[in-house]
Length: 83
Image (cartoon, rainbow, N blue to C red; front, side, top):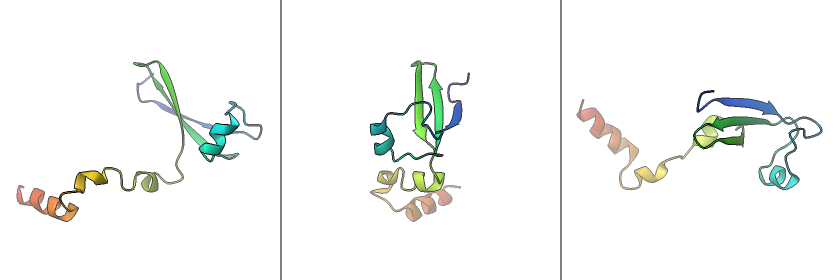
């Protein structure tokens, strides 16, 4: 299996897969929500995470600390000048 392979499962009406209530509440999971599954062969770990309703919304603002000293417009302008 590929190191980054992700599988998807669905939480059924009886919460099959048995997700503890504390985790369901903290992760705000509900019946019918989807989960993303990943198996890490290097660490021999299974990673499970809720599938975002919108990947764009989930990733919004990621890496914003990279632009703390410079606006994104200034960065793009400098990069274009180097072309």
